[in-house]
Length: 293
Ligand SMILES: NC(=O)c1ccc[n+]([C@@H]2O[C@H](COP(=O)([O-])OP(=O)(O)OC[C@H]3O[C@@H](n4cnc5c(N)ncnc54)[C@H](OP(=O)(O)O)[C@@H]3O)[C@@H](O)[C@H]2O)c1
Image (cartoon, rainbow, N blue to C red; front, side, top):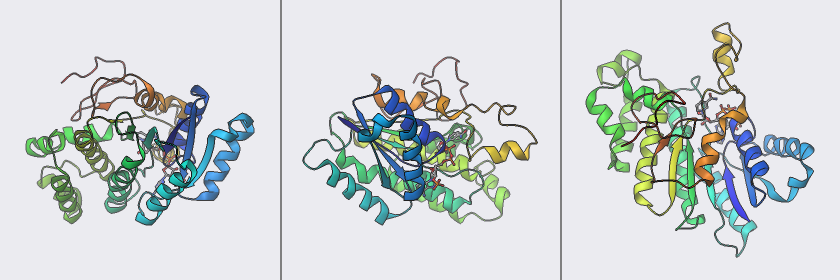
């Protein structure tokens, strides 16, 4: 039995990813990560009401990606449940994230540093020759990079970037004052916390894939999906989610499922919601020509 951990899986795209894995892969067990165990349990019960036979392939694991203690306890819990079985995990889907309403510190600490914390803690649970990590980032990352000055763009797309450099960049961003003007003066566009955090998460994916070349480590955007993260934006525009072009959660799983289970060429790439490679520094519309290096 393959085992996959999905973070932030009690609702939205994460829950849809759990549903898709269990529906499409009857050889796969899912750890449904939820920072609130009660919300995780509600999600598990909802899935089992529809599919009672999934009971032996689904477990909730408490996981707040911003907490070392929580991530450490999650690793111990997975080790305990798996016992002698190796590898403990076939794959990790880093889906947990916060949206545009959160401040820069919270956004970095969840979308970038939280993702990194889970990756670093889970690498030892994966099969070193075949394990997979899928980082759910966003098209907001490449769009953000596209609005940066050339030197910032080079940094955020540098395939040889080191963690010390990326961490230094994050600290610099956290120290910038004067809002949008401060960011613009430093070649960082409008300083959108969400776009910045996802651009850095894409860069981190590059460097992690370089460190572990025998794993398959990639990032993707799910597309524009109606969830609690996006609904407030539709409301602020006086439109329905459908009028804004948002798709239902199950349509946000395509790239993740591809990156978890399909044959892949290469490593450390970023994919669009159509499961095709996309560039790190500009938006590529789904269905258009795939990106090539
Ligand atoms: N929706 C879109 O159009 C879209 C587009 C591009 C990328 N994405 C990305 O897709 C991912 C899922 O987003 P979504 O749209 O499904 O949003 P959502 O419905 O708001 O779900 C976000 C999930 O992340 C969890 N989460 C937040 N902070 C966490 C933390 N510190 N530790 C653990 N879990 C945490 C939430 O848990 P709680 O229930 O406890 O808050 C929830 O389960 C995010 O990474 C988002 O950036 C979404």
